Image 1 (cartoon, rainbow, N blue to C red):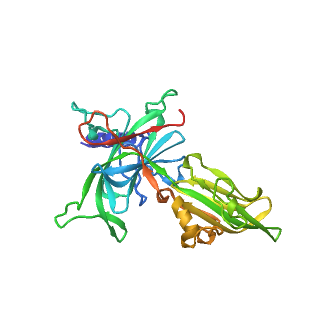
Image 2: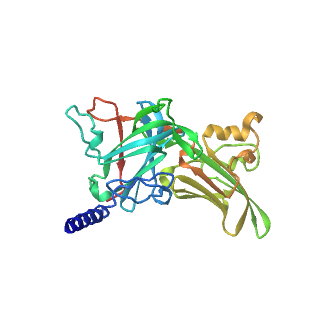
Image 3: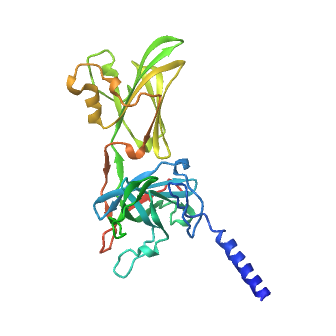
Length: 346
């Protein structure tokens, strides 16, 4: 009997060693810092510490209801996919398939056969998968994959420790929807900046975003002032802050994690005294500058919402986002969406 018990112990130890030697291929992370057990890994991903520029897609429930987003980015040989619920919702299941969609005889997706999946009984705001590029069907001539991101999203209410699932008196979800990632979010925002600088302790003058779309006003520097379209695909970027070609400062823009960071500094010996930054839709820019006072005056930079040298704006808070066309799953008789992602290289 002792030998039999010893055999069981040795077998259990062997199984544990094998199970802990899984390839780091998929990571699921809850926003409270805990992880979900899976057949892939028990590690934690901090999305904000992962480099790369994310592409954002809508998470659509019930075919038309916007319930969150699916973000995708690549970094150091891995593809990261983040499911996020909008305020008022929580995610209780996710299923992820990258190319090679499993289907039944009717051509419908077999969600239970997706390569990556998890269940979160208490719900989560964010779920992150980390997938090794080496396991994906890409080549130098074909760098694109189709991403099928499925989730079950439920209604949530605010509790003492954040969002919690909202149940009815019978213990059922108040609402529950099947959701798919699809479409694409394109930010439609502009920025404009004015800085006031000094040089060697003496007033030096203004620094403006001159290189952009100008609007002419009556004051001396108004016709020089420009606004610039915010292009997330070409960040980081730097813009001179100048007046009539004399550069006094710089506006640096970069994406750090899920945020866009704007930094205003003095250059060429200049010291920044004051900065005024606008980021938002074009119509809001004109409303802030002129409002009911009409045109023919200097832009009202004192109305600009960001007046610190460093401004951090979450990507999801950038205004005037639009969604591109939703792509239905080909050949399926049931509704569902997908989107494509193209890697920068092997």
